[in-house]
Length: 131
Image 1 (cartoon, helix red, strand yellow):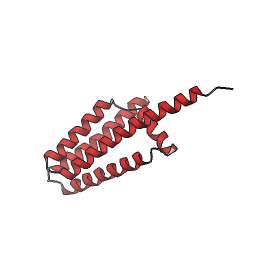
Image 2 (tube, rainbow, N blue to C red):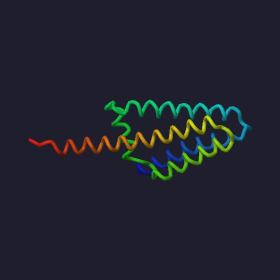
Image 3 (tube, rainbow, N blue to C red):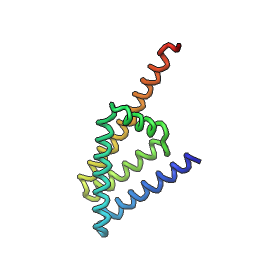
Image 4 (cartoon, rainbow, N blue to C red):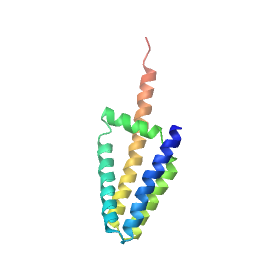
C-alpha cells in the first residue's frame, strides 16, 4: 500500500510539474510560465544544497532513504527529466533547460554517492567485532 501511495504522489507531483512546463512554454499562460521558472530554480537550488551537504549525517541519511525507496524505476524518472529538458530547449527556454538538466544530473550523482556511502557504512558496521 505504501508503494502505491508513493507512485500516486510521484504521478501527481511530476504530472503537475510537466503540465506547468508544457502550458508555460506554449506562451499562452504567462503566469504558469513564471511558476515553471520558479519551480525549476527551486529544484536546482535544492539539489545543489543537498549535494553540497552530503557529508552532513542527517542530509546523507535522508538521501540514503530516498535512494533506497524509489517510487518508480530510475529509467522512468530519467525519461521524464529528459523529456522536460528537451521541451525547454526545443521551445527556446535554454537557461531553464540547462538548469533543469544540471539539477537532474546532480540528483543522480547525489543518489549514487549516498548509495556508496551507505554501502561503506554498512560494511564498516559489519566488519566491527561484536562483543
